[in-house]
Each structure stands twice: as C-alpha cells, then as structure tokens.
Image 1 (cartoon, rainbow, N blue to C red):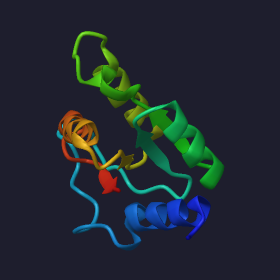
Image 2 (image 1 turned 180 degrees about the vertical axis):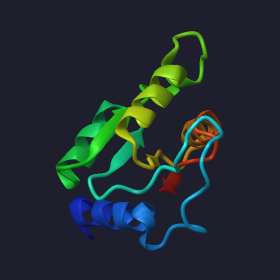
Image 3 (image 1 turned 135 degrees about the horizontal axis):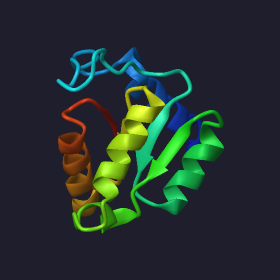
Image 4 (image 1 turned 120 degrees about the vertical axis):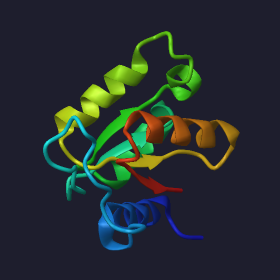
Length: 122
C-alpha cells in the first residue's frame, strides 16, 4: 500500500498542469489575465481533516476548506468568500473533494462559482 504523502503529491502535480485536461482554461470576463497553476499550490478541500492531510503532504500549499455542505446552502456567503480568496491567491485552484455525492455536488458548485477556472483531482 502506497503512503498518502507521495500519492497526494502525484495528484497535485497532475492537477497543477503536468497532465491537466486541455490546459489552463481561459479568463473569466471580470479578470484581465487567466489564473495559472502555481508551484506553491492552491487546493480546495471539503473539511478540516482533508486540509490537514494536504498540508502534511504539500507543505507550501495554500489550502481552503469548504466545511463540507456549508458551501452549498447559499445563505452563509461562503461562496463569495471562496471566490474572493481564490482571486486573492491569484493561482488556478485544484478542487480535491471526495468521490461521493457530496463531493461531486461541491465540485460542481465550486466549478460554477469559479466560472470553470479550476482543476479537478480525485
């Protein structure tokens, strides 16, 4: 069994553009330049435990966690906060959620919030 640390590094490298699907998406209308994958990494995960695991595996990564389904309710303002944090970071985020129904819903919601400007890793 492969340890979690190298596996997460492989996922990050793949998501950061070494094997990205179709390259970097174009810019959102409100932005003058497209986001680019960053060697430092901006990773969006579901919860606190996921954030800790990613930080252990990729020490320089900037990790944003969504508190699970909290992002989907639309009442907390978490969606606009997420978009603000991604734009402040200035790099193309990688969405790393669980492959279950909640993870898929979060992945699709985040993709919509960011106008498709994100990479996906499982």
